[in-house]
Image 1 (cartoon, one colour):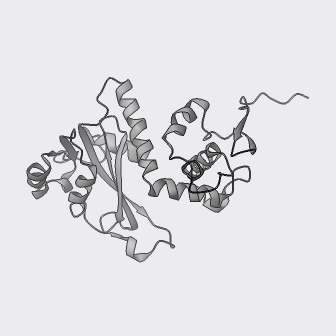
Image 2 (cartoon, helix red, strand yellow):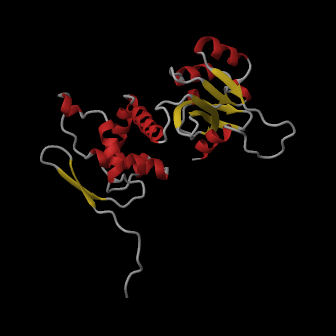
Image 3 (spheres, rainbow, N blue to C red):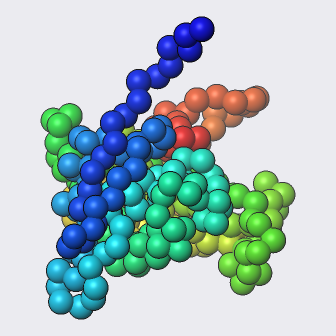
Length: 250
């Protein structure tokens, strides 16, 4: 009896993982990079330590490391739960920490966003940003010093503060304890977000008040508040703010 047809399998990928080392892994997870994606990502990664004369050749192909990171993010697993056909989880974790600390992850994000904007006929850097935040319950292993209680959402954990462009593409993220009101870290958040082409900020009422005058005087930014209509009951899509809310849902 014949097996029912299934999804087409991706062919094995051969990668050189250092002098004389050949690695092969069948690419079958939805999160695995395609050849087109890898051709964009590979040049954006920092040079290998061996290539700069500061370390040994890397034992595992970088594409396998990137696939491991993407698998973890896509499936929400623990590092220790990495499937056995990837490089060891400690190796993948180490590369992730190195690339994040060196700013490589942020540069990759920015470069890919620039490509999308240019392809759409826009300037490489956003001139408008939309801000919002989301409180997330923290695991028991999260230290008390980096968590807090959000009285409005009744959540004990952390708060991720997002800024996106007009297309909903991520500009920057700042993670804080969930306890401070959005207006407290707002100035620091704007300073991290700031670049010369940015001129307009949209947000909820937390970004109003004295922040509007401060941003205009010190950053030459126009901050505008998108408020809920008076008497609104239930959920309603608000102009501009829906873009950052959609990104949060993603």
